[in-house]
Image 1: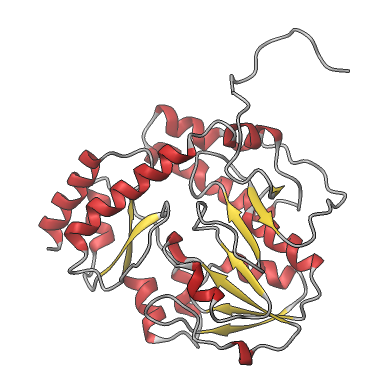
Image 2: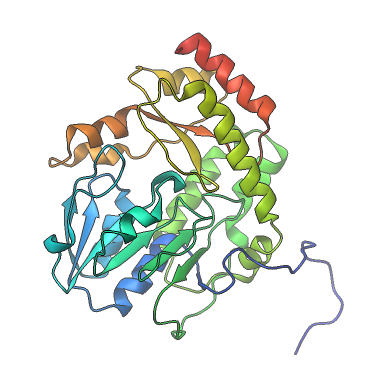
Length: 315
């Protein structure tokens, strides 16, 4: 029976999520696993420039895989004719900056759209699409999946309360003080069994002002871009609530310099360098791309500080 009385939980409103019609799962890699277990694919084509967690998930699903290269626009260097009827192409919308129409025009038969870096992008037409929540918002886990088969499987609902410590530390202290807990949580995510999204994660995701956060990201991105577009080796034709500002420039030690200035940038992905088949461009991305933070926690004043630091260390 429903409990009446007792102590209070966190005070959260029940509004609407950004992806209310999607299947709610507990992590991006488990959203991919769910899909791979549902679809009759025998082999997955995936980019060399990819996180190891994707490869581990494909192995867990017991499927074969093969790598393909991407071009300087971060698009697949593979044609629909290269895929058989039982092979799927894993397309990554890198940093939320790829125009999905460019992929749709190619008419691939089987597409799995990895939008873990593109939370605000609409699901791809004629494709299964999955998103990761914690790459964009302060939640410990959670993912969304759009697929042809929306019939729910018999899964348990996840419970997340033991995975909030790094978020609470970050709320009250500096990032460096909660970083160890953050890394521990990343390890926990790797081992999560396939489950539905937890109630606490769903409620937090129902409390976010999505249009506001999207606009902040875009404004911050465009502010940086007006100063960096001439030196950035990556070019963009569309932005839609991007995850970060990816600055690609051949400057040794730039990430370390920014870290010393208390500007923290993620790395995507060092493990790529261990793959023997990786191209020079893909290796260059893994080594040189600097992911400048532009998310909803920051203002144009913060972007000015980033530019000022870059002027000392780069421009």
